[in-house]
Length: 231
Image (cartoon, rainbow, N blue to C red; front, top):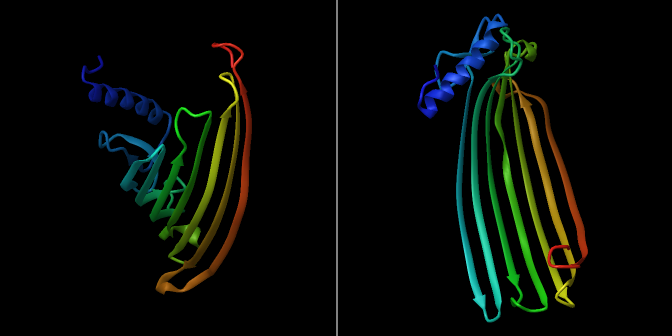
């Protein structure tokens, strides 16, 4: 008989599903889920963890300037992740990993809107994106690392992107609208990485990759309302 409470009922159902799964497998070691400690869910040679922290700060300004409207929104986001996982999902210590990752992301979008209620509806704006993140480190150990008792992979990726755009829609009649839009994006990407062994000995790398983009995109659309219910 299933429990009445929502949480207890969910645990009851999940335990039943996991029980069926475990009935048809023989496991030397198990991972355990947090909702009910002691219920084995998958094979592994140690118990894994996954911790994610996500911090967000955001601010927005909206201001009327005569018949125009100005809007600007800035957001800062910080990700921090720690994962300890048996990547080979077997009882053998083949590839065990500790992932220490993090990233900082900043975005800003500024927009200026034309007068409302006009036959010409337009908007111009800019968008900025910045990301700096990577693994510090991605720790690996097990028989897959060969002669090394462990290896550490360090990586860092940076992305800077800036775009300018504009779009205008002209209503020649109450039922016909023509839309024209144009956007240009400039973007730079950078990736650095290296692999180290015990004693911070560099086993591979360092690698450095750079890439730049400069891409315009456009839009042309004609909308026609044939009746109040058909567009």
